[in-house]
Length: 336
Ligand code: GLU
Image 1 (cartoon, rainbow, N blue to C red):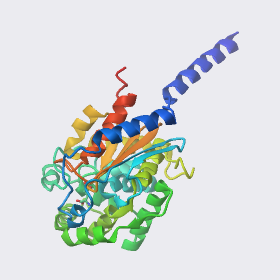
Image 2 (image 1 turned 135 degrees about the vertical axis):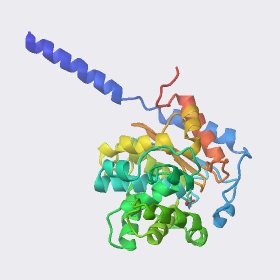
Image 3 (image 1 turned 180 degrees about the horizontal axis):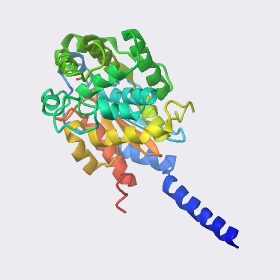
Image 4 (image 1 turned 180 degrees about the vertical axis):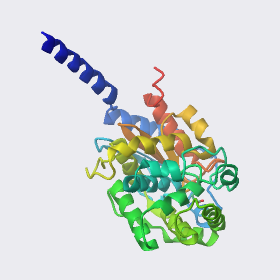
């Protein structure tokens, strides 16, 4: 009898546990419907403008717009300009952070970079000076450069090789640097070089500053299309296993930490507004990409070059917000 009661209790506990983790994935048909609605609704939105502080970004056609969803089962739903390569820019910061966590553990990021929002612009120097000298979080430029410096490597080539290899595993396809973007940013990235120097001066950068900034600039210039970026996010939604190739890229234990940094810092000083409006971990890039992850379910990517004042794609954020709210996907509850 005692044994029976114990087994029933265990069965109930197991069922409760599975309920918590088995959020029901909307069907592919439903996902297709909302993705198409989001695309149609914001295709002609004229808000924002291309980044131009990196001159080559100003030349990317502003009308480009694509939406892709990749589920943890490997289903791919796509609408619009999903095959055009664009520079990954700051969406890359998520995956370099994941590389460092996988290589050296989560605590290295927490201790040496920190995970706090700055409330300042993405390229703020003031934010470093106001804090304890650390870079604040891995998604502002300071923190992303510091994260690159934490990769275990003896040479710039080794450092780069580790970055591109893990990005390719996340994406499940071969990726190339967009040379025009890289050249343009490398010729104009004086502010980032300054940030690296400030960090190095206070022992908060862990490799040679100019080399580190150059590797960082290259990582930002990696070309991805919206589908590849969505598979990268799908890998995070699937506990670190690429849902299309089925290859394990990082250990599952790192995923909640990666997503927490995305939730708190993914939209720079617009992160609070994003949590309010959409409520899912996400990361933006000045190339016009936004990658959002619904934990244990799917990634949603929007791509369109015109940006708002905080440097976040206008059409992409509206499209993702639309999909998340239509399906009640906020991590804070469906509101239904
Ligand atoms: N490469 C860009 C920079 O360093 C990234 C900024 C962004 O995408 O937000 O300024």
